[in-house]
Length: 543
View 1 (cartoon, rainbow, N blue to C red):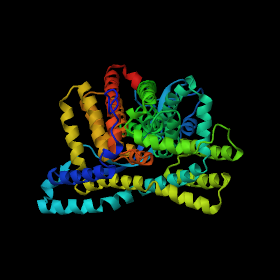
View 2: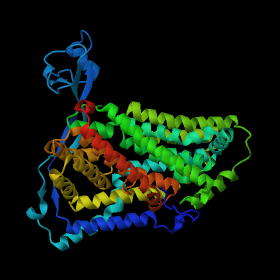
View 3: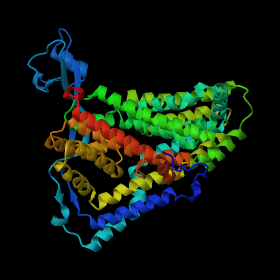
């Protein structure tokens, strides 16, 4: 599964691979070239407040008003809008013990209207020269337009770098890692850290859609992996890859499943048991892969594609070692601030609907507070804050340029053409083949629309009636969407989170892809099997 499998051969040097900015520049030009030859077209769009069907078991003596209050549904909801969960038909009365579905307003999204695709090339033809002019202008504007589109993410990345620049400069986190690894020794506890971390972060991805915050976490998991004798790729896998595997096999994620099931007119949450089993299978696969890889590079560090980078990490970490003498009170205070911030950010996202703005503010406060607790004065904190932010300039540029790819395709008006071309041939195929290809099609669309909720709003209005045409349960279409979207996130250079993580880790995108693609392929195979299973289980299992 590794990028280089021949025994004893040296790992490819990171510096020999094309730079990520160079690769993104090439993709940008190819996207512009595609707009010259693909027909322009678009679907009609509408702004919808998506209705979520909230499952609820009717209690003894429960009135309609009490039921609406318990489920968060509008107070003016009529009894006829409440559905029997087993038949999806309106209930005539509230029968105690009956499982019902209560409609309540969810997220507001711009969604496409199915069967409204029209070719703009026929209605408003452009000459080749006009297409070239539009494409050239879009390419020239791509970096700044991408920066504008991802401004909040870029700001978040810079603040993460600044905060951790201060926290790491205190040396407390390094000393804590030394202390922890020394305490673990070479026993079984050391071996369990990798799978435990993967299941933890995968659960975060499965429940609240952990994404941008992994950029902060990898700044801790990478030095931890290095201290354990592993490599940078293991550190990324322990956090980022784990969260995205959980994202793909999610059972609660409101940003993907919530939007997709609402458009497909399915309960949220639904098919919970099936999704939990799916999540466990894909997470266990990722954990086994990571354990195999970690053991391999521990035996021979030169096997890692990031061997040179790992050596620099070890040199820096070992240069700060002063022996295992325990942690001072200052060290403990800084470590507790760092850990508390990471935990608090997760709770904020899961419980209080935090997003980038709130998390960025939290990390800035943590960086300044950690600096003072670590014994820094204001001048030193400001200096480390600036230097930490500077380390994230390249990731910020990468994120901006990756977002610019979508801007070019939108300017050329070919994005909807790609979606239509992917969906149209599926109507003639068998259910298993169609379900698998829907997943593949979602992975393709994910390249252009890396936002999970945005992709659901774009594709599910087309995929839902397609499932009906194929006599395929709509839940299978939702599963195909979440697998294609989630696993694709770990490969596409247009993902702000992936490129932010790789930029923070100093791992070129090309090196990452050469290392991880076989695992991603295996996960897609497992997902395809799960889709076929979903086609053959009783319909009740998917509700």
